Length: 307
Image (cartoon, rainbow, N blue to C red; front, side, top):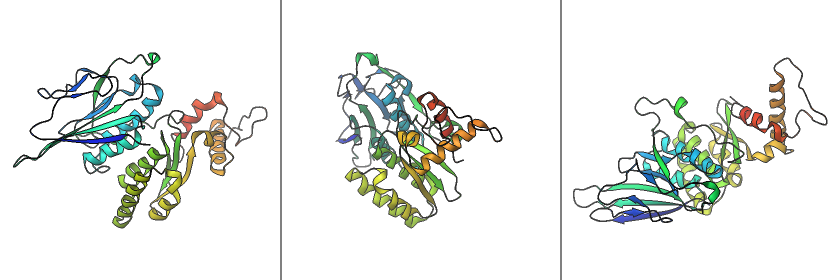
């Protein structure tokens, strides 16, 4: 399930906001949100009135939280070609965050000639353990790709480690170029495919775009995952985009499916080089399961597979 979303509307200015878990000040009615301050360890992101985004660093969080936090950063840093407005951007953040998360919308309502303003605050209210050692977070700004001369290819966040974000798919465009995508839940990986791939530029036909957008709104409400609607999406997108495989990282490593076997065989052939024979261990087949000791190497291979 995605994060909970709570829209709050105020008149004549917004009040101070405190973290729901700790009571620590997040937003001051007089001074706004101090992006330089040490904030509650439960705060994950903040989008201000002007659309500037600030996030907690993934490396400060527990591994399972760091995985979705990298996706939040990817969404908040995406260019306007992927999300037309900040409301859609925040909705995509909700989709990749867990059910323990809460996103608050602080809206200063329009009055007369005043158009109003809106800001968003994302929290993860899952209990923190002593082992986490997290007592506060520092916020860092997220550059918006395609703005101020930013280069998408160099500034984009890498794919999350599939051992931490184990739900994935392999998709191809109309030219047959493909790549793996990973996320923390079946619902979040569906959101990524729709927003980042399809509506992010792969679909060019207005009718297909409208159809996918309408279907996704319904799917999001019902909580379905990518595996439930992959066939429908392939019908809607035609040759513009194709989901070749969807499933879990564990299935890709050890499953008996044809696609998984093909990927593992390609990985082992890549290890041996173009002309060298593939070195197999005892009782190991060319398309057999990936050993735990080889997972680091296999994960790196997946980042370039298909392109």
